Length: 393
Ligand SMILES: Cc1ncc(COP(=O)(O)O)c(C=O)c1O
Image (tube, rainbow, N blue to C red; front, top):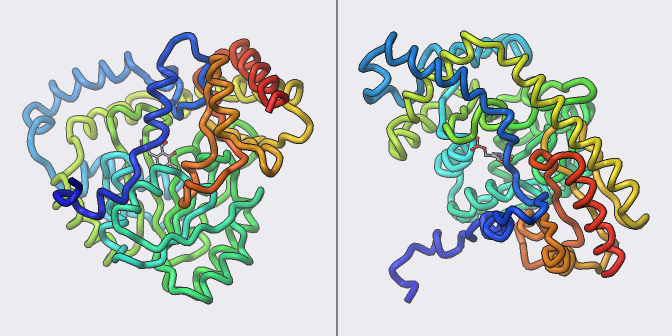
C-alpha cells in the first residue's frame, strides 16, 4: 500500500506534539504541553496600522512577486541589529529571509545533506529539527547536552571518528531543556569545530527572551567560517506570519541556499515582510519584548516555586533564565509516558521526553514543561497535580 510514497516521507515521523495538542485543546486541561508564545507577544494594533500604511505607501509592490533573498530594507535592519550585538561585519547580503526558521532547517538539509551523511544534534533536541532533517536521511549523531552546553569530550570523539557534515545547536534556552551554553563552552566548541569541515547551525528563536542574567556571544562570532545563524520573529512578534532568516558570511553556502529556496517557494510572503519592517521602524520592539519578558519571568518563577514545593525530591528540573521551557528528569526506570497518561486523566498535560530523541523508541524518564500560556495560579495548581501523580508512580 505504501509503494506510492517516497521512502523519505515514510521514514519521517508526524509531529508527536501536534498529536498531543489535539488532546489538550480542551479548555478544562491545564496544559504545559504546547510551545506557543503567549498572545501578549502579538502587537495587534500596531500591525493593523502597519498593514494600512504599507498598502497606502507601497501600493502594488506589497502584492507582487518579489526577490528570493527577501525585502532589502528588512535585511538591512536585521544586519544592523547583528552588527550592534554580534559582529560588525554582517551585511544585508549575508541575510536570507525564510518562511520561519523551520524553512531554514529544511533548506540547510536540502543544500548539505546526502543520504547517510553524519549530522550532529543535541540530545535531547528540537523535534522540529529531527523531523526536518529526517527527510534528507542523514546518519544522526546525537550528542549529550549538559547543563552548560554540548558534551565537548563526546563531540570531539565523534568528530575524530566520523566526518560530520553538520552540527545543529540551540545555544540559548534550548527547546526542550531551557538550557543555555556557557561562554566558555561556546569558545571551546568554536575551537574544536575550526579543526573540522563541519557546518554549525545556531538556531536562536529564544535568545531575545532572556529575563535574567547577561547574554553570551554567538559561537560563530569567535571566528568560524562555516557558521550559520537562524533568527525568527515567531517568539517576539508573531509566529503566524512565518518570518525568519538565515545569516551566514559563507558566500558559497548562501548562493546554494538561495537556489534551494527559489525551488521551494520562490520567496517568502512579501506582504508580511513589508509589514514587519514597517512595524520595526515605527514602533519600539525592545519595549514590546520587555513586556513579554516580564510576563515570562512571572510565569517561570511561579512554576519553579511550585516545583520546589510539590515535586518529589528525586525529580530534578532545569532553571532557565529565559525562553519558554523547563526540562524535568524522573528517577531512572520511571516512565514519563506512564506519567503522561496518568496526568491527563487528572486534566494536566505536558510532553513526555521521547520525541526529543532521535531514537524515540528509547524509554526516556524525562519531560518538557511550557510555562508561557498559563496564569500563575493555574501553573501552581497544575504542578501540584503533577507532583501528586509523580508520587503515585
Ligand atoms: C528551536 C526551534 N527552532 C525553530 C522553531 C520554529 O520556529 P519558526 O516559527 O521560526 O519556524 C522553533 C519553534 O518552536 C524552535 O523551538
